[in-house]
Length: 258
Image (cartoon, rainbow, N blue to C red; front, side, top):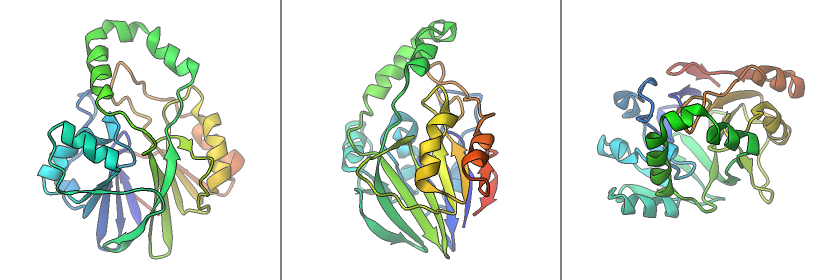
């Protein structure tokens, strides 16, 4: 298996002759970031959505209109899409504990939780001159975010092929009633939402015990409400808790073997 990061939480996973696109997002709120290449995205056999938030799901029509489907998303996500005028014929509802194949790749779905923003993170936005310098954009973003509210439909995915397993979280939260599989060959962790993400990550490393860890979602996806996250403590934290594990800070658009 191998994996490619396209920025924010967008991933392309390949196993055998099958490719799966995860949380495709065009990053239209930050023109300084390269957009996800649609032509390459068309090589995917399906799309999986971890949760229907703005930066994971709002661009889905662009991808379905390009012929990339089915889209596996929560029932709540399908209802959101319909409210926004997106055709939902190519969307399939998923829920925790489902297990099935998409081509050569086996998929398992687990209940997850959204990262709870801490006070320092919230204050860094509320009291930043940058926020008020771009107040109109901030207000516009907040209004659009209201159109993508979520309940409990935040999922973690396990993708496996050829004896290799990739575990993907869409947000940095865990469900206390869910027993997650450990020992994945690669664990993808969203490095956004807390002021000290390396400390927040520690409990996930203990729970999942992966052989390698890759971060995503650490870019400035929709300023002024987001920031590029400092990642200097990521690798040392992985090595502290899992000395044998590989720690990957991905370069956008590059393949990584699992």
